[in-house]
Length: 150
Image (cartoon, rainbow, N blue to C red; front, side, top):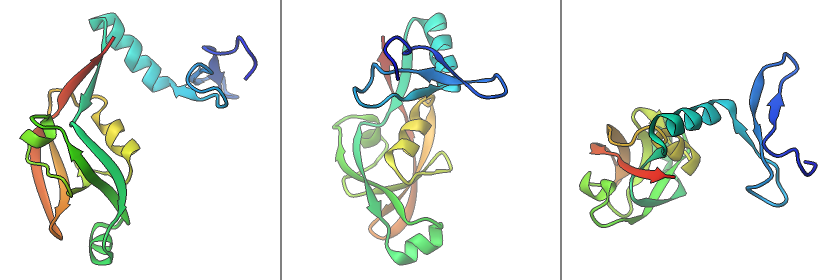
């Protein structure tokens, strides 16, 4: 992206706005923030002066599922919980080190982007988490924590 283009819209051939270009996040890359995300952030800033993001208080990493569970769930990966923040939302909801998250509020979770995307608007809400614990599929409900960004 040429200097000075950051912050400008990415326009489709039909004239619709796809997102906002930015070069401020990374030196060698020029990502585009999707228009829906820009809209949500602007609305939150106008209404509340801050953007609220949901969080669980975990550190996840991708993990391959055992063959039998992959077949049963119809996907090959989930998110292995490698850290649980003491007294965080996940700990209060019963998540434990070694659990593998495979769904959040009924939506498949195969990588961290899936989980973080689902958490974006979930702050303060009761949400279901489907996980694998000890080779069994288990579901729990927890209250998603809120992390404000100003």
